[in-house]
Length: 234
Image (cartoon, rainbow, N blue to C red):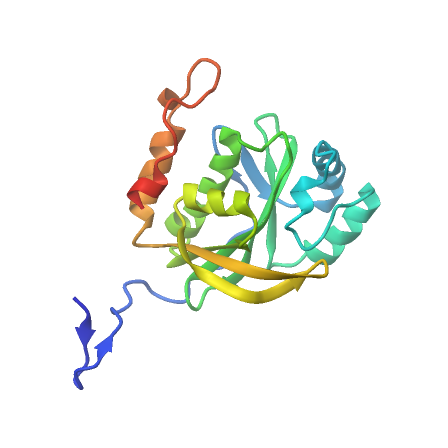
C-alpha cells in the first residue's frame, strides 16, 4: 500500500539503506569460469586486440560509440583517453587460463543515490555465449548489491541492438522504457532502451544465477542442462 503524508498525498517508501554507498574498489572478482581484473593498458591491450580481432566482420563494434580499431596502437590510444579514469571504471574479463577475452565497466557511479550502471560491454568471440560471459555479469552484479549495498543497477543500450536487449532480459533486468533520440554516435541517432535491477529484485535474481552456475547444471561437455531462469523469477 502506498504511504500518505499528513496532507493525504501519496509519497514514496522510506529508504531502508544508508546513503551514500561506497565507491566500487579497484580489485579483482573471481568465479569458476572467469575472473575480472582492473583494466591494465600495459598488460591487456595486446591480448585484447588479438581476441577482438577474431571477429573478422567487426560485428562487436556496431553498437559501441567507438571502434573498430585497425591496430594495437589505435586501441591503445582509445584506452588512454577512455579507460584510465574512475568513472567509467573498466575491468578486463579473463577466461579460466587468465587470457583477456572482453571488457566491461561500471559507469555513472552515483554513491549518493546508490545507483550504478554497467556498460562498455564488449565480448570477444571466444567469450560470447559461454558460461564465463554470464558469470562475469553475475560477478559485477554481486559486487554492486552484496558487497557495496547499492539500490539500483542499470543497463542501457541502443534500442535496435537486439542482442543487448535479449541479454538484459535474460540476466534479470526489467525494461523501463525507451528514451527517443537520447544520444548520437557514429553519425546516427540512438534511441536508448533502459533496464534495471533494484535491490528488491536482487534476492530472486541472485538465486537464479546461483542455481544456473551450479556445477550440477552442466554436463560432461560443459553444456547447460537448464536455461537461466532469471526472467521468470525477477
